[in-house]
Length: 332
Image (tube, rainbow, N blue to C red; front, side, top):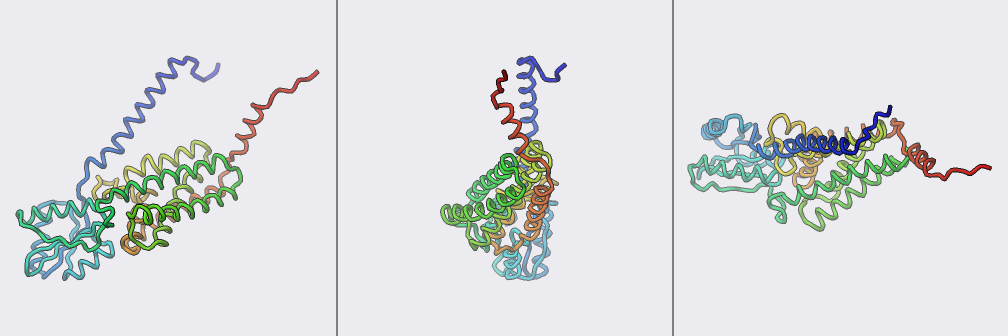
């Protein structure tokens, strides 16, 4: 007896239940991180003379327990270096005229706005001078263009990996396709995001390298899993890269704002690592991008190795289709 479901009514009901079940899983996966954004051991600095800096650090810890990972620095110059090296998101600098807030909106406009509000609360409503040490691009002050522009690169990279493994049979051709796509994706990304939309402000080759490596890591992961497991592997790659990786990436916010441990998990997946690396390349001369660079390089290498070792090929499926579509021979 065939194991297929013969009743169209039963099949339709099962598909509806399955779709709703997937929806019930995806909605909290996408919505929960965004709905619970709050600082969780967010790296910030307090700079100034020892008594004043220590007192200010204590006030921050008491006002928001567990929200900040506070380091003390001797002066404002040291705080600005930490901001440019992407070691902290902001610094409260105590001086003779009071406390000033030094920020790096390029690292996360969301965090810069949040800390500006926190500074006003700590000062009992008195205005706090804000110095943007590493500003966001003036054409994209809220970072919305950066986040929205990065998402299509993730989608097209996932699609490129799937198409290469589903339509191209030869392993060598798949590898050439992956490298060719990565190079073109990096160049096209710079042309659009930097040259046309103006949401990036760094060195062109550094930005192109970051986007190209992300494209290779993403497409290579999907293609590698597809080469190893066939069509289910392509689905697994899409699940890893997009359905799980995108909501946990914090591209529009910061990993330290997501509930634990999802911020850390997101940075170990291609989209989160790619967003962090591109920010470092575009606004910080590469500072703070070493871990993301290693993560993406790891995905790229593993994906390429799987493409070489995987035995699944599109050729048998194509031959099977050709056989079923060939007209039957008439014998006399």
